[in-house]
Length: 143
Image (tube, rainbow, N blue to C red; front, side, top):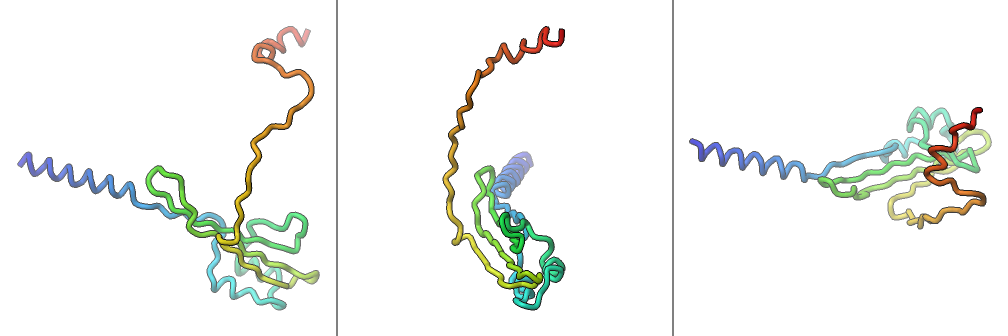
């Protein structure tokens, strides 16, 4: 009987360990379906219609407010490892001056580009304050 209990505990322990290693899928942002995108008709759909069909945009164009972007990412994480990007979708909806859809552009993971991040710091002029100056700098300053 004790041997059976040990085997059951071992089997359930292995099952729990395997379940922890299964992938966990995460969807972030606004991941639109093909049916939702097809509902946006060029020349006919207005801004208000787009909000009803797709929801509010993830962001608007920085230099051109006539562009709305819907951004979605899908990742898969296995155990404690860094998540892998499985799908990425960016839908750009361009509006004309009247507020009707002028063009709908779709971008996927394959259209993305890696950007090198510069980690340098910009030097500043002046005196850098040391640790003790920060601690004791305000003592006697209010007198």
